[in-house]
Amino acid sequence: MTVSIIRCCALGGALVCAGQLAAQEQREFDRLSYRADLLIRAEHTELPVRDIERLRSSLRLGVEYLASDAIEFGIGARLALGSDDNADNRRNFDNQRSDEVALDQFWMRWYVNPDWVVVIGKDQVPLSLSPMLWDEDLRPVGVSSDWQVAVGDFDNFSVVVGYFAPDLVYGDDSRLAAVQAAYRFRDGAPTGGSILLSYLDYSGLDELPAEGLSRTNRVANGRLLSDYQLLDLQLVGRTTVAEQPLELRVDLVRNLGADDENEGARASLVWGDRREAGNWELGIATQRMQRDAVLAAASDDDWWFHSFSRGVMPWVGYGLNDVWNLRVAAFNERRDRANVDVRRYLIDLRARW
Image 1 (tube, one colour):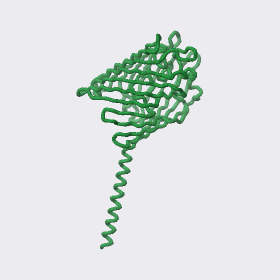
Image 2 (image 1 turned 90 degrees about the vertical axis):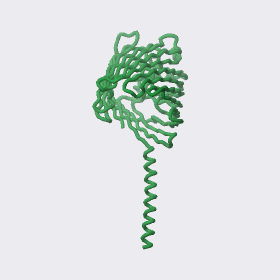
Image 3 (image 1 turned 60 degrees about the vertical axis):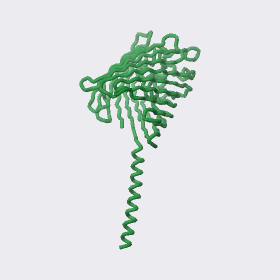
Image 4 (image 1 turned 60 degrees about the horizontal axis):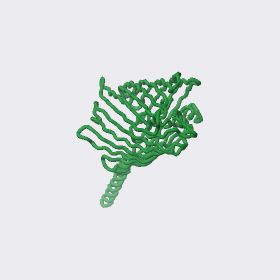
């Protein structure tokens, strides 16, 4: 009887220890989160001197770990494979290599308090910028501070500041100091709007022409002719039509570092959201950028021209399910002082887990 009691106690103690270890492991597992983003893109681009046909794929994998209520870490990799060669990326104005295995993210996030977050490392730029100014595929390295506060019952005011190495496709010494103030009306409600005012100050750009990254910006004596100090205003309005979101966005930019050729404008209208299963998305965007209005090395490479152009982009998308969605986009662009259009067609199949 005594032996049985001892055995039961020992078994009970072992079960308690095992339960504690399992609970601890579960807590550790709950602190981990995983994500994956797969993009498969088919492209056809019609240029005056040649056509481009290629298939490109990009897989981003990431892990995030919440070490405590205040500290979070993240790391990610990008794996890319394309039918073209990396040697073609310069002349095709790409912001990323077609074939690579590279570090995509490596950061620490500090939740100073519920309204203030500081991020150090390599991550997406924390500012909300339009494709005219910034390609969201870029992953700069630096430090940023994001502070926001509720205004009344429905509005929100935020200020983001940061200092980054843009980490462009080829090695360079460029730097970016940025600040963005945003006021969001009825944040999160079906109907509302936003006003975003941003200032981007680039420095260390001397190497860009030699690397083929001056693109459509002006160059004199092997250096960019203008400085790039961009003042940008975005006006956003959103509502619901036929039970689907409708967003109108207008973006106006002026480069204070250029004496002329320094203004750009973009407008977009989007109905629906293809990220939801069974949802359609219809959109159209138009933009006009003078030659030194934006830094061409950093603007979105979905568009063939990165400045010194005007163009329109209609698209249609559909959410195949909760993971997969499809977008078909067409671009009609014309370089300033030219009379020939560039036409581009992109078919994007994307999955997010």
